[in-house]
Length: 106
Image (cartoon, rainbow, N blue to C red; front, top):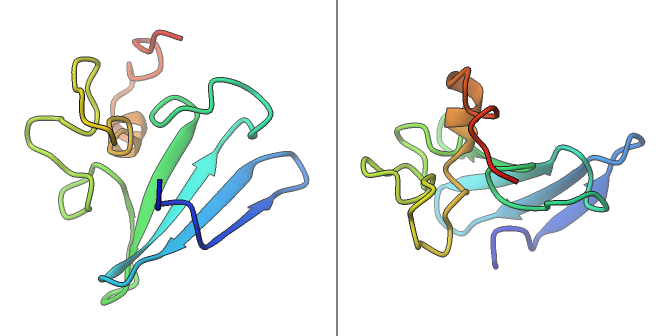
């Protein structure tokens, strides 16, 4: 996976932050909120992605309209999607849907 290849660091409380500076028009920041040593280490469960737009500097949750992992048919955040990047577009849903975490199946 090339979305996590430009730098990583771990905070004092164990949160893993991954950086990717693309050659297109954004920078990706991915955060493993419970740390890389704790399962499930899975996109949309404990690993969430954000996009910084290089043109306007705005931070956007992946899956929001205008982000690279936005899809009208939820191919990047769906229990039934077979897309290899399924889960990458779940950050927006996790932040805006109050039942998102209750509906996850670990």
